[in-house]
Length: 61
Image (cartoon, rainbow, N blue to C red; front, side, top):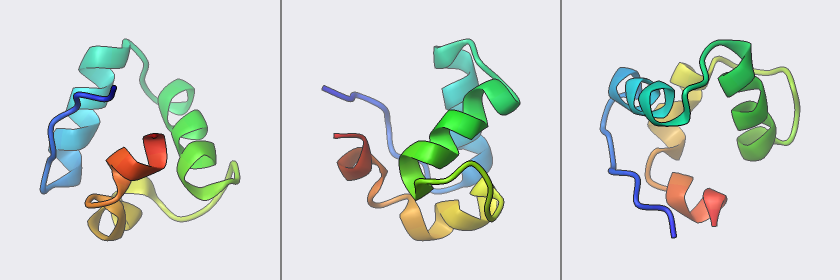
């Protein structure tokens, strides 16, 4: 079960992901982009986060 806290802002969410995954840069965000959007390239994750933050736990399930 995913126990990640909810963050209202992208920078806090990104810091949490980096700290707890040990990944950063392309090694973190390329797989995340594929998981969330189904493709390797697209809008910046920070731009998407505002629209997706309430659904991220559901996507990861």
